[in-house]
Image (cartoon, rainbow, N blue to C red):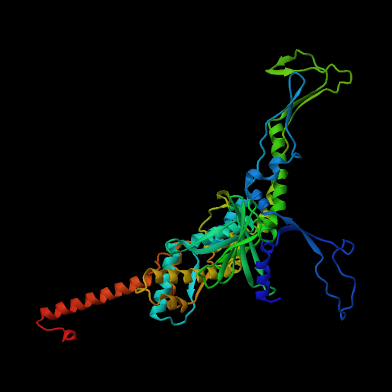
Length: 509
């Protein structure tokens, strides 16, 4: 089935537009465990019959991700297997002591740290033209200026944070009532379910958004030209199968699908089981410490009610027949082994999530701390962010394409005389946008390095200007204006010198 045929089939059956691949964690084999996943013995030069996978998965809902992200919803807070604390009353009864369980927000820490390293720096934009003309350079600067004014880096950061929190996310570009190019994030938490439909080659056929408003379900599907809105109102008579009615079909005004979707694992997906174990052990230990943390005086035997006082101490004599009376102070259990276990689990959580938790107590000041030492300390975070840079590459480039296209139409409609060629000018430039991984650095040392490389000829003056952390988007134009002003100043100085000597400046003749 071809591309167009698959699209027609999807649009003809709105129920199929609501289908999406589930998120999962548990994977198991359906053919049994007798062979432990190994094939039977074969000779090295023999072949075997290829078979489809026999693995099955247990779906995980996105509601579950939201509960894991919120510490107040963790399972440990409602786990009846955590031991309760009781005490014996004077009247012979028993009472439960109040003990509030503790949930550790590992998921939120992991998510925040990964988002920081992936979006802590603005996206890096590169003009893919070896020798750009002045018009192309000016267009590139204009696009970057509007990119910053419209807070596109902030929207990208929100998009990454949403995906790492809920599994998927959508970013929809549109024109507001003023005709300005804008975008907004569509997340599961806000009631939007993202359904991406691809062909056999992995190319996107339709991007669909399922949502509900005033007890009415909607499906908005986007292709390269149109937005199709299906409506299912349970309060009215249905005119089509399953109650879905095509409410409208309109042109969305872009040259490609204006909805960008991104799907992946939540930031803590690989270590959720370790986090559950950590919280259970932690709360069991706290319960024991709460009950026995102050110690217990244990007395065994038959003693008189009135003890003798000697040197400020009370002496009790055991009158039992066997004479096996005893008295001792029981100290609370030693926490060293449990603390070591918890630390080991925490280390495994950091390794599995590719994220480090660095606290002030972990910093040991002994001489200068170099950038290499910091990079090594955060190597897990940097490696994870570098992988994100690759995974999000299609998203960042499509963001730039849609924004550039929409900005050209906006400027042209705003002032057709001033921006009469802006659409063709923007089509003439190809901009490559990518994540610049954030890592701690000294800005003074960084800018000094850029200056040295520029003076040494390793970097061009224009590149050095762009890489400097203090540069503005129009830094090149500012330098050109200053250079022109300096030339005019020198020219006026020469004219004055000639006038003083009674000569005329040859340049003015």
